[in-house]
Length: 244
Picture 1 (tube, rainbow, N blue to C red):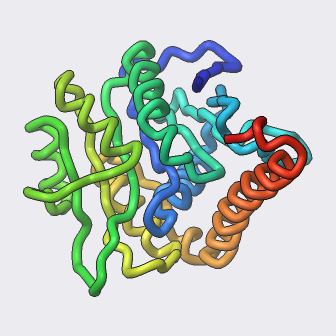
Picture 2 (cartoon, one colour):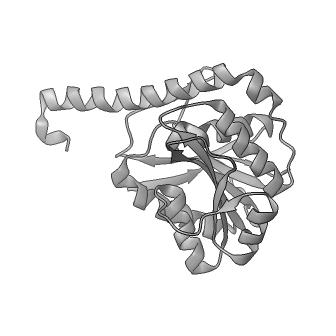
C-alpha cells in the first residue's frame, strides 16, 4: 500500500504538476532534479510504502524519504522526485494514488517528462496530449504528437486517466539512443518545458554541471538497486518466507 503524506498543508488548486519518474535515459529524474534546484522548490511531503526498497536519502546531513513532493507557490508548480526506479508491480498502484491525490488537491494540469528509446538519431521531441488544448499547446511548443504507438510507465497511466476525465496532461518525450544517459536529453526536455509553461529556467548551468548531474543520478539509481538486492539477499539467507 502506498501512502502520500504531506508535511505541511499546501493548496495546489490551479497548480501544474510535473513528474519524471525514472525511465529511459533517466531523462525525467535529471530534469526534475534540475527544476527543483533552479526554481528553489520547497520540500512538502513524501510517498511511502513497505514495498519500496529500504532506502533513506541523506541531503545536507538530513535523512529524507527517497520519494518526495516539492512545490513553489511563486510558480504554482508541484512535483514528485523519486530516487529509485519504481518496481514494475507497483506502477499501477502508484499512478492511481498520485492521480487521486492530484485531483483531490485541485491540480489543473499534468506535465510528464521522460525519454523514448530510439535506435538511430532522431530530430525533434515527441509528445502525447490528453485534450485538444494540450494538443494545440504541444504543436505550438514544437513537439511532434505521436499518432500511433504504445506508451508505458507512470506517465502513461496518468495520461490515460486524464483522457477519461478531460484533464489537461502533456507528455514531453525526448528520443534517447540506446542505453545512453546524457544530461543533454534533460536540457532538451527543460527547453520544451519552458515553452509549454512560459517559464525561463536557465539551462546553461545544466550543461556546465552535466557530469556532476549525471554522476548524481547514476549513484542514486545504483544505490536504490543495490539496497533492494542486498536486502533481499540478507532476508532470504535468514528466513526465505519473509520476502517474496
